[in-house]
View (cartoon, rainbow, N blue to C red):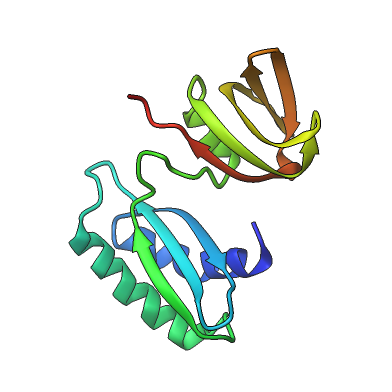
Length: 151
């Protein structure tokens, strides 16, 4: 997680949880005037449009006060969806046995993109079952990881 995403997460996490939601993750895409801050929320009951609006209002007010991002950006609040991105180690453990799409910061076995079955989550790496065997991929080179929806 980048520093700005960590800062935003720290600012909004307790408020999102106080509203009854899990803060699944924060993603910031800087693009000048087209920058986007995405806040992903989840709950056992699922996420509705009204839930997103409620959280968006709260988060927007907090970020207006704290002002952690110095450029213009668009705030989006949504559910993580079925092809959810994984943001932390605890989330990986919940998806053991699922198919993952990985984008890495640096090449591993000559590639930055990998697809495989998550078989184990260790302290510093994940174990991914792929066609030609098993890869042990360190957490620190994972850039973006998404769960492949079933069906």
